[in-house]
Length: 159
Image (cartoon, rainbow, N blue to C red):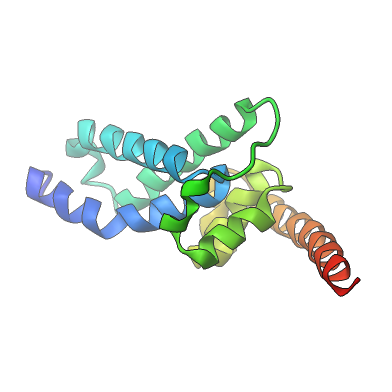
């Protein structure tokens, strides 16, 4: 990338939706996800001369957004229900966020990156700044928790 404004515009257009999707799944709120994602891209813009020289500037902005999303989720005193504005995210993504509400923010981040953003275990580990075994642990615990949630949901609807 050339480090100019036009390079940032193209970068933004290529990366924004994917970063927003991952952030949304972590925080569970469309508006909060938009704010966090926009803040991450603002930080990227401010530092664009340096970031544009990176091999993968998208990884940098994704890491900033994920870190801020996890912090935002951890700051919440308790989990809040998804706001009514979730129709903008699409039904599949909204349902995914509902299912993931019971997971820890790190588990949500790992699930969002690995399954929704189609990142490898190594890429998820780099994004979350942890070991690959920690990512596998987050994913395993998330799958176990989701299995319980889905079994309870299925059992409740069968009754």
